[in-house]
Amino acid sequence: MRCSREKGKTHLLKVAYALSSGYKLFKQPSEMEESDLRDFLTERLIRLFLPLNNKLGKLYHTGAEERAECTINFSLEQTLKISFSKSSQSVHIIENKNYEQYQQTPVFIPAQESLSFMEGMLSLYDRYQMTFDETYRDLWSLLDLPVIRSENLQEKSKWAMEEIKNICGGKFIFYGGGRVNFKVKNIEYSVNAIAEGFRKMGVLSRLLETGAIQPGMSGTLFWDEPEGNINPKLMRLLVEILLELSRNGQQVIVATHDYVFLKWFDLLIDEKKDDKITYHSLYREQENNQLRVNSTHEYLEIYPNPIDEAFEALINNEIDKTMGVLGK
Image (cartoon, rainbow, N blue to C red):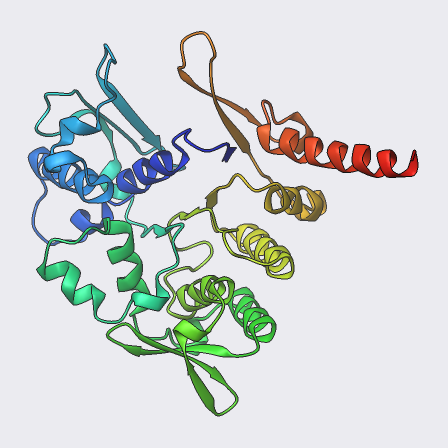
């Protein structure tokens, strides 16, 4: 997915993440009723979006005439469709087709890096009213899991973890309770002293280490602006890892407005390895300001593409400046 700012890409990720989170309810031993699912999804949306006064109806687009509807379809013919309006106290379940059978655990990595302030936050979040949405709490819970047994760690996960360790020059050590240090040989450093790009890569490595991300087994990986504060060398490795995870059965959905990050996918995709990428371009119609989406499997067919247009304008300005100097 790619789009310019203020097009709602984070909202789309969160909605998909919310509707993929039924495992929290279905893994409980008691019998589930539709009212349980309705209440769960309502609370989930509120905790993920933090609407004004914690009212579901505040998520409804001002001025819209119809009810908001959200539909998610899974690969094994499982479907969930919900709706709500500005006066709704809870979601209305329009369709539920075998949704309880989907029990994979999705992963959401927010745009803002959180390793640097993770210590103690999990217990604080569960006890007090916090300004962080629930994606952070979910991520902290996954990062705080124990390490998966080595025999259960997939080879591609081991490869990715080693690549991250090599490029960062060390390894992030998790002590529990959110305490994290960065270790180089036998010396440990505060995680706050480490570059934010390295911390982002450390999050991915830890999710692999705990088994929260297991290609072919875990739920979808949603990542909002993974390219943020990532240097060019890290960016290429990140794309290589995401592609490799995808080749081994991990669904990955990222939201970006970065040209270089997007272009690396185009350059590194390998059709011989059966790579498949769908690009979604979000835009607003000039006539009515309604949000629309165009989807394609070809990078060159992304339209509209304001990211590419902005980069092209930059290059053209540089050429004009250079030619102007040469012409003097």
